[in-house]
Length: 112
Length: 111
Image 1 (cartoon, rainbow over the protein chains, first blue to last red):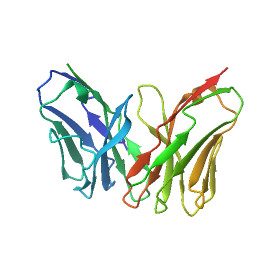
Image 2 (spheres, chains in turn brown, yellow):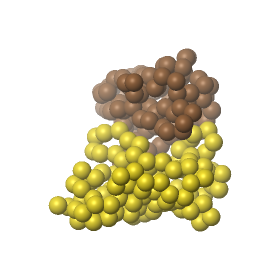
Image 3 (cartoon, rainbow over the protein chains, first blue to last red):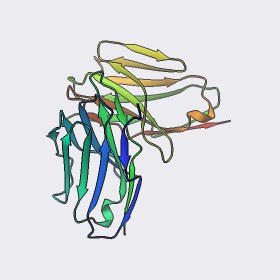
Image 4 (spheres, rainbow over the protein chains, first blue to last red):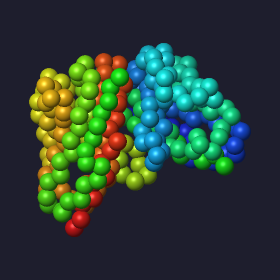
């Protein structure tokens, strides 16, 4: 298995632009999580899905952030419009019935 | 909600010595406790985990202990090596699999 796949690995964009991050969970995993990591705030859970249904989006910082999971093998995290303070590493992770949560390689986002 | 505290924030050990990281959690309903290792610029990597019905688990040089009564759990690394240098995170999970992470411990193993 290739593990959790994220794209792009790096994204540099200008303030005000729309950013879309993509994630493919491990096949057979039924829960998917989006995290943001910065030096100041550490690892923050933004939203998570169970069987493609959003369970808890209380970590989404603002209405500028949205996430979807149209099917079991794909999820997106969108920021519109982006701001410099959104610069961070965004991780996607997935969990199967055995409980282990596995992280993707992350997307390093820089908003100038 | 769940709150996880992790200590120490930094830990410097001599190669070959042991390292211990301690975490406490607040929600007695938490039932799964994983540990992650994150090297600079890399993803958090699951290294060991323990469930609430087990008191101790060992995998080669790493071991975890859990005290449900006191609501604390610990990571033990024996015979540390330079490649053990990283940030280590503890976490506690609810029944949905939602993880609450500790703030992390920067471990530095000096040769």
